[in-house]
Image 1 (cartoon, rainbow, N blue to C red):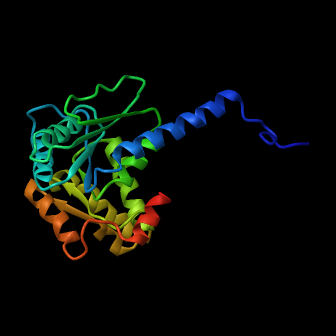
Image 2 (cartoon, helix red, strand yellow):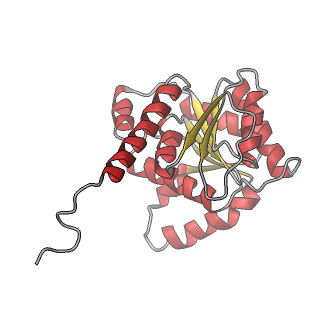
Length: 233
C-alpha cells in the first residue's frame, strides 16, 4: 500500500503558486539591489504617533539616514511608519517598505521611496535579511519577536554575515534578556557567547555609533565569502 501523499502530482494551481513566489523574490531582489548599506528596523504596528516609542524609532531612523543608511521597514503603521518617516526626512532619505498582504489589510504608510508588496511572509523575511547591514529592533509584539529571533538564528548559524543586532530601549527588553540568560544559557540551550550577539541601546545616536563601531575595521561591503553566504540565504 502506497503511503499517503506519495505520487501526488503538482496541480496547475500549485505550479502557478510557485511562479508567484519566484516572482516576489525576483522583483524584490532587482529593486533592492542598489540600496546597501541598509538597516532593517522592526517594531510594533500598534504604537501611536507621538508616543515615546514612535519618537524613538523616528529619530533613530533619521540619524541612520543622515549617516548614509537606507532604512527597511515592514511598510505598515506604528513603528514601521515612524522608521520610514525618519528615513524619508533624513539627509539621504531612502525609505523602503516591505508591505505584506494580511487578512485584515495592512495599511501602507506614506513615507516610502521604494514600496514592495508581498503575499508570503517567508519571501519578505528573506529580503529583510538579504540586504541588511544591521538589525535594529524596537519594542514590539509577536511579529517583532519573530523577526528578532530569525535575525539572531541566521547570525548564530552563519547563514548570513556577522552583523549587529541592536535592541532599543533597555527597560522593554530587560525581562527577555534576563530570561535568556537564566534559562537558555544556564540550561545549555545556547552558548554564553550567543548572548553577545545582541547589543542594547537606549538613545538613537548610540545605535548609529554601535553600527559604525562594528564595521570600523572592515568596512560595510561584504567580503567575497560573505557574498557567497548571502547568495544561499
